[in-house]
Amino acid sequence: RRFAVVTASGFALFETALGACAVAWSERGIVGMQLPEASEGRSRSRIQRRFAAAQEAAPPPEVQRAIDGIVALLAGKAADLSAVALDTDAVPAFDRRVYAATRGIAPGATLSYGQIAAQLGDARLAREVGQALGRNPFAIVVPCHRVLAADGRLGGFSASGGAATKQRLLMIEGARGGDTPDLFDAPADGA
Image 1 (cartoon, rainbow, N blue to C red):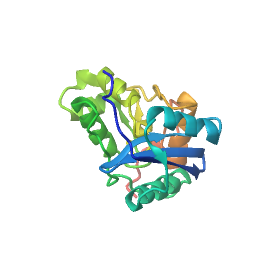
Image 2 (cartoon, one colour):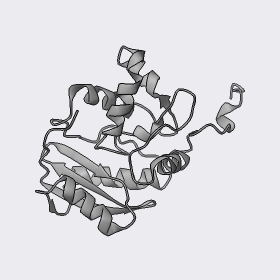
Image 3 (cartoon, rainbow, N blue to C red):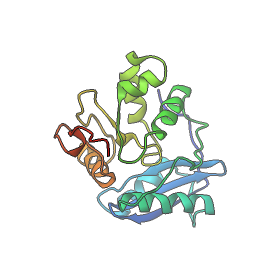
């Protein structure tokens, strides 16, 4: 399904450890995020295409707090984005449920598409969960990069750079991503 038309009142670019990200907002909250493209100009062009009526502006305080959290998270610091206000009016109901479940995944942790589907009440909806995450307009705030395939492989990622970007985000957070064993595979020692 396609998203309804979303009206954003403003957008801003901001620098992160990965490059220039962008955020668009309405009076109700963030309506869209843009992970870095190859250049700041391309990031700006992409957010302007998605939110043509939005004007580039200084973000309001609540959006600036979200930006600060995103910058910290992408620099490898602890940041909780779960309270960031999102304007989901144009998001289909199923996708909103998927995004709410995904927002519950802590930095450094991962779940599978099937685990998210099971949280929603039907593990057979794993494919639909993946499709909803592929449409995620709130990347990073809705941490779709923390959702992996059932066998531990990365699965898809629709942002610029694809699976390599997903892997990089997981590495920044200290999470296991992909099918390479690491310290997370060691048995717990009770410590």
